[in-house]
Image (cartoon, rainbow, N blue to C red):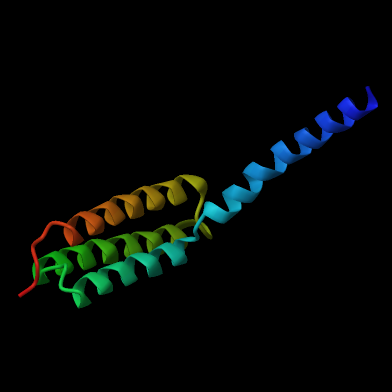
Length: 109
């Protein structure tokens, strides 16, 4: 009986720590996301996967999100959770657009 109680307690501890560890590993800060998206646009340009107009449009949207983050940070001493979710949603949409534009077979000539 004692072995079963120890086993259950061990499983409970493991179940509680695994999601916390994976959440920390999967979460990216705002600055990391910005750097990663900027790098993906640069790679698309260098590899000829983005046309000039696609790159300009993606850069413009990227700058708009960066400016929005700046306004959010100035408005109230940092980002609250709603602002962070909004920025994450916008970064996700931009990441999908970058992926789409890099794979749409419109190569730069």
